[in-house]
Image 1 (cartoon, helix red, strand yellow):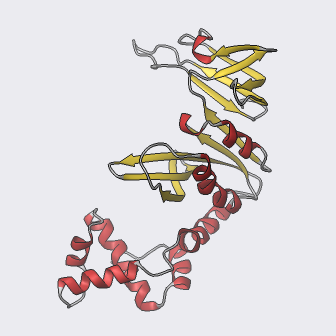
Image 2 (image 1 turned 90 degrees about the vertical axis):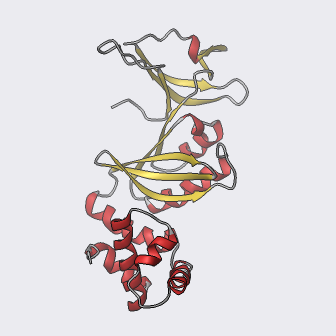
Image 3 (image 1 turned 60 degrees about the horizontal axis):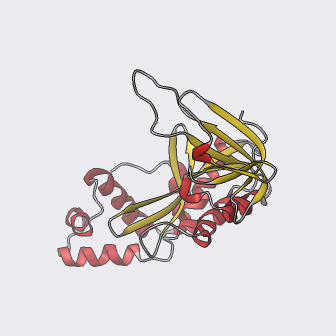
Length: 253
């Protein structure tokens, strides 16, 4: 059986008694070996000499323990790991994203590390489709609190470029944002002169950067910067459309 890394075992042993810790270790090994989360399949391979149905119930009872809470179980491990990888006040990039597969609609915040996304906090949305502001704040709040000693840059796709979310993030200390705008969004580049992003004439190979722009006609707010880039053609291929980024960073470096 593969042993858990010391960082994990140290914290997990604080949350579970010894029999529970052994069950957890067995399940983790089975998940890595079987590559499935089907309860019946895990129970079939679970090494306890009892009937299959009893094994299923045993695993169900174990997974229903109150210790299985992200903030209780995962945050202490993550916090210890971050302290070994980042000095205080260093920059951490967070990505807020939503993934939907059939009836499962997952809202998640991840940390960028070595070109990978490390999940930090997530929950299932009660319906299909886009998340709302309250849900976005709900998934971001505990993560920002956990990483309060670091400079944070929140990255998000077009679903998360709402006026209220951008304002909420910008009002927090040491929190910055870089959110992708929809091409039909309006920006005020000159006083009382509004442009729709799709009408700015950006072509492959072009980019621009505006400071202190005002965004949206209906709920306009100012003090943000707008960056846009349309990747140039490469070997006969080009991006489908340009990227428009709303940010409160002072510069692009």
